[in-house]
Length: 212
Image (spheres, helix red, strand yellow):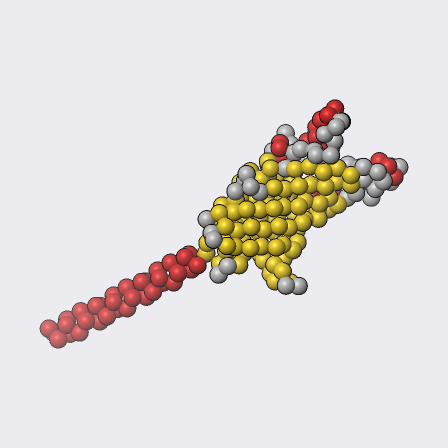
């Protein structure tokens, strides 16, 4: 009886030790994985987002929108994920500085229900869902949310990490009609004359600086 109890006690001890060892091993793996991922916070003062909108004939306008907040994650020096928030109330125009009345009118129009519906949607967001190497560059896939609607987007980027600072540049080509932004689109309003048509696609050039 004593021997059976001893054997049982030994079995329990071995099982507990084994469980404890596996738990410690799992904790070490989790810690190593978490340690391998480095998160950088976007420096919103050093980062810029520049937009370009073009009419079919005539005007081309440029401006900026502020990055409100963001972060990017790296593993073994490579970008793996990230997210960004844009302040749509910060939309500006750069090319009409010598025509302040027209400039104000344009910015107000961009914020109106014809375009970005800023009163109801003060923020836009982009979330990186995957990063793949293509043509020697990282290609970023993600979800862009505009005026409350989310669609996917893919684009190449140039990314550098050095001395605890990550920098990146990318040019995004956005087909606004996928998000329901159809104002001035010749594909949706066939009656528009050429000088009233606004291209469906606009560009956003992003320059990011992020720090650990």
